[in-house]
Length: 256
Image (cartoon, rainbow, N blue to C red; front, top):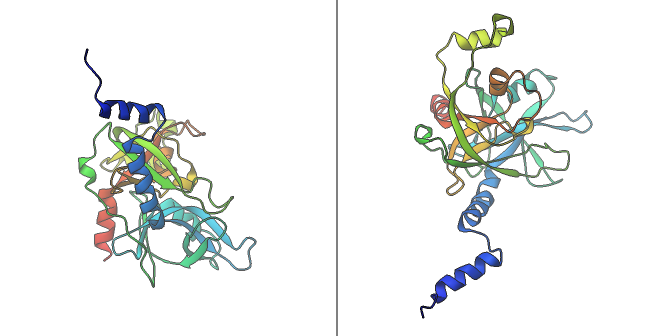
């Protein structure tokens, strides 16, 4: 009578005991590694209560003094009180600390912004070749969907690249074409990553990365792209978009 190898029995025992799979363990290690690079983006005004205001998420890239985020996140800050100081929020929980930053560049077409820090660099995340991303590929993104309501706490979501889609979809009729949509239609459409994950406005600017390596392939966008592609949807729909990392690399190269 044949016997089952002891190694098979051991592995089966681990499964029955609910031991984490290797993929989950790899993601847990990557999340721990990328969290110090992911920051909140906001402003400081000492006469305001509370003095710190959170707007979105960003992450360190390049030499660690460059922080990438979404342009619409920065635009909200630029349109606010001129006495506000733009910067990043870093740390954990209620002990989040503010660090001033300079707005170095804004790319409105791809909804990207580049901030520049002074002083000690943050650990930078590596940018991968976004041109190699394929439909069905597993991804993850980490950011601050709830802002700082309960303190600065990183939140990670798994995602799958559902589609490589053009950034703008034609409207059903001309009456639904606003100025922004018309301007985008006049340009050559570029591809964005459509993800099967739910994100919220605070997630804008979160890095989209390989869950096994932490290499970044895109940046989560919850306002600009969604407004162009899903004007009829007002609530989180289980669909999220991300701008490919190639545009982030161009922004970094232009502002060395």
